[in-house]
Length: 524
Image 1 (cartoon, rainbow, N blue to C red):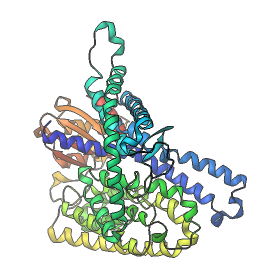
Image 2 (cartoon, one colour; image 1 turned 135 degrees about the vertical axis):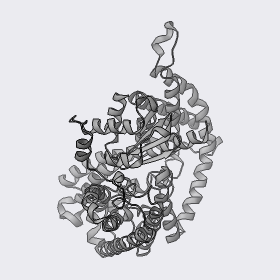
Image 3 (tube, helix red, strand yellow; image 1 turned 60 degrees about the vertical axis):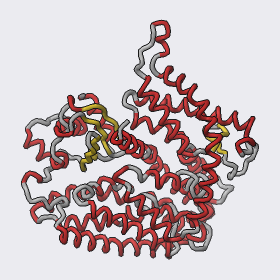
Image 4 (tube, rainbow, N blue to C red; image 1 turned 120 degrees about the vertical axis):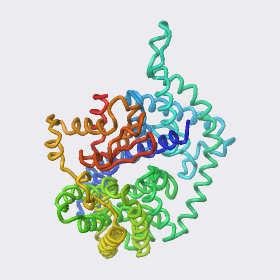
């Protein structure tokens, strides 16, 4: 495999990790609301532990917590959705079965030979290196193990799913063959996991000690890298071990915060003293406040005659970024035409998180306004309102800093951000204008229309090798990149951007990308 294919695979792998995260925002809201309604400080004595109200809220809370308790399973099943080249539903089922086989192999090996690998299988201590996943007591490899096994499963699926077999064993063709090969492969993989992973756990423990003691510098560096690596898709490898795995707390920051939210809401102390690890979940500061300053600067620096059109682009991506924390659609409006702005964005976002931490504020502020309010501000307001007012002031100040910085750099360097193009060819058309201009698109399905237009922009069906998607991007391999239309074409048809790495193409679609991919595959 050449370097380009390796890079493309890594990008797809990183992007695919985001798919299960979409569940966490939804159920995090439910967990946050029910945690608030279980808190006597918020709703009074009706929320005492012996009341029916408390029990009902607790039932709902536990149900919503399911996605946090079974995160490895979600990541295992979610990965093939983006990476499987065919029959992604079958690939997800195969990954689940192979992952369960792997966990049972590891569980039984450790039951018999645990001390050989430095593991006490009978221990119930949370620091034992063990975890219970889908009812199986096994080695705690978190989402790393789930993604590793799922990645192997996807590879086997892509290679052997369509393998022709002799007539007398043809019944084993497809998923049974993939799982059978996976069964054989999992035994040596399980043995290697038992040998290697306890050493990794020891290393993680050392990293945890370092990061907890690194203070604001560690928070700044973490947030800077998490933002800076977004274009490569490798930012997932920065935040995932902290938010969803055991890098700083058992089970990850998100699960730990939710689990202890009721307890934290009763403590009158600095949040940094209560939960210092939550400093690594302050990336949401740059998701709630930065988009406001960025959007204002992009609008202000646009040519006067184009401000109305640029506003129609900015409003939806601004709302998405601020309320949900999904910032890619906004960031991709300037990332590829003015990468220096993205560097400034990463720097300012990291600085905002570090300053917020310096004022003693932590928690689960990793996404947008909806989650951040329901998991932080609402349930903890009675005891932490002063800290949260300071946090909001910091955010508002940085809105101004973002605006001034972006406006100055755009004008000083004459950057061609959206709305500043001088030629008619780079005009940003609305979808209606584009359809009227082309006179071709009359179908009622907007996903089908976008898929057809994207296909035209990529050189037609004959130029497509394969297509997958992550949470927001359509990822396509093409035969001849010279057949691609200009970036402006993709903006005109309603895409948010285009990334070209030789024959590996990414078309930035947004959260509707699964529907667009489905229509795209129907056409080709």
